[in-house]
Image (cartoon, rainbow, N blue to C red; front, side, top):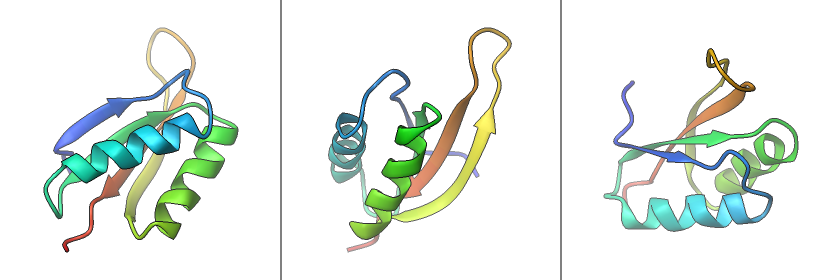
Length: 82
């Protein structure tokens, strides 16, 4: 499924990555799909759970390995329809 927008938060510490994700989602249309790029470790452990607790739907989460640089996680989260 193709996301409506992407947000690259690699290198962003917790809880700032959650706050930025939530603010971005609030600006999107209800039902829109956002893909967020997160670092391994605390970001990928904390952000999805925090979003679920706020009522956002987690569609997919997969690890990606670009040709250059370290791997990261691509999290697809949907803004609920009001």
